[in-house]
Image (tube, rainbow over all chains, first blue to last red; front, side, top):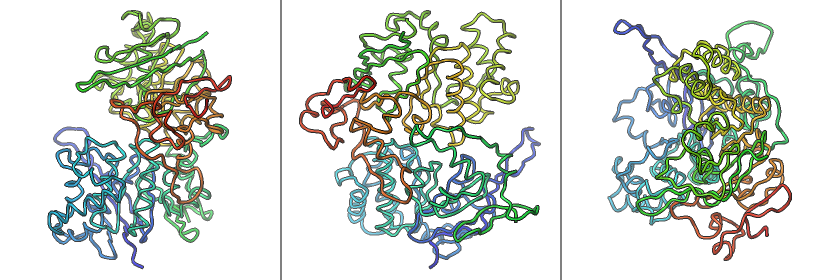
Length: 307
Length: 320
């Protein structure tokens, strides 16, 4: 079956100005370097890595919210990389996004019903009263009752605002949801609620979710597959439990090792690797030298290694 | 001897439409060298408790009332400006969540550390600079001199947090308040900073108060845990007991909702509802609207915080 979303050799280069005033030279910074990802239908793919690893840029490129410098983006098998504004619009319906900071993502001057109905309005779906009715139903689906329709974002808690953001993203019944750290700003007791909501809606609506996060504990509970980004590259990708039990790349291992223990009894000494040490420890599949590349080492398990 | 002694602390902030009671009757004792974790969600009063202990809140608007508030033997409720200045830095120091806003962007790191040292200790500028470099080396910064000459925006979050810890240690405090010191950091950097704080605490024999919402941070760093909710202390126990046998229903629910405890994609055990609004807290026990075992008594009257054994205490009618 055609994957819901596919990134093929996608890169993003930003030009950085060096200091030196008017005659300053620019240097290229490769924020995302030749990333290929497949999001199968009805699955949740976790994209993890530290800040600056390029995971958010990758997510934004998948939505065409950031233009890729190279590579292709396929939604439902159609290449949308070069589509113009008008041609892209029908595809925008198929992909939606939820951000970390739900406070700045919601217009403070609009009621929740207006916020959730806005995508329907933009795409001209239904009459105004139908749009409002659908928005209220969507609010109920995300765990807020209909009375919330007349409220404003500032009246809500962080968890409730994130529910509204999810309701707005899903009202167009998209195939793909990019969720960029949607639980990072939430309290511990509310985080579980939002994770459960995403799991329920994914199953119910047949969603495919690209879940961007630095929280590996959340990723373990929520995702089917995990891709690990390091310095703009994908260095390892595998089914979630394989990542947690049989990680091969030194960066993946250092990320896993850094997760705080779940019980004080498991306290342990850790060794911290620098970037240079991680690069130097790139796995070798044979004794030879070469450039590191992604290789399939087991079904569904890709590893950046020197062959 | 008790280093920090708080009895029945209440902190309130008057608003145009009522009073926000951020802390409602918190008692806490910390002995020299002890490490305590204060766990709670946003609005639980954990940060405000620490800010009040150091009298860092602006009064008014805030109002601090307590039966006792002593830090290093100083009565913090009656201490004047100079006495407070002597306590801050020398007896107690604080590390904040966001090192970017804690440093002044227009001065170098070195300038700010030297300024702190000289405010509290009678050292020449060059001696203080040498001391600052030694402190940066102490927090495992490999190029102290380069960092001394850097401005905050030139450093990464992890590096800035190290510099802030160095600054906090500059007057050899007896107790370090660390308020979510790793929340803004990546998981690998978090592990390094927690390791550093633990190591320094052991070496210097400092007491530590680690304020966090993250049970993992608590599991990594402290000996004793204080669980706060809705401005009150719900439970306190040695760290291993909190994880092995939490007693308070809130602590139990919090533990059960931690993601990643068992392998595999799965729904989590959630706590229904949201944290109480501090401007309009529920009557009785603040957790009763979300509690699975609450009854009419819980809604009517707040349970007293009482000892359950030599090392454990909780505020819950069900545990009486």
